[in-house]
Image (cartoon, rainbow, N blue to C red; front, side):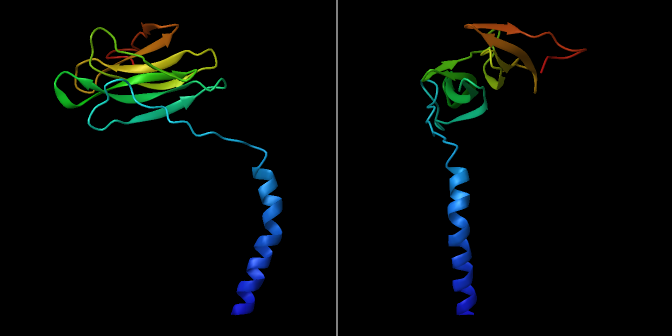
Length: 139
C-alpha cells in the first residue's frame, strides 16, 4: 500500500510541471467591485457580464426609502468606478445582465407590477427603454 502511494506521488510530481506551465500562460486579477453608495443591510454586489475592455455589469444593493433591506440597482464598473444604472420612470430597482464591446449595457427595471420588468439599454450615461415584444412588458 505504501509503495502505491509513493508511486502516485511521483507520477503527480512528474506530470505537475507540464500542467503548471500551461496554466501560467493566463493571468487573472481579482478586483473587489464594491457596492453602490449607501448599500443596505446586506451590502453586496454581483457581477453578471464582462466585455473585452474589462467593463463589468451586475447588480448591487442600495437603500430604498426607510426599508432596511433596500432594493437593487444595476451597475456598470469601468475604469475603477462603479456607476448606478438607475431605473426607468421612478421605478424602484433594476438589474444589469449584459454588456457589449461598445460599452452598451442591457438591464431590466422593475416596473411596479408583480414580476413586471421593462428592459433598457444604458449607454453614454443615458437609459433608453426597449419596446415590448407582443403584449406585456419588455424583458
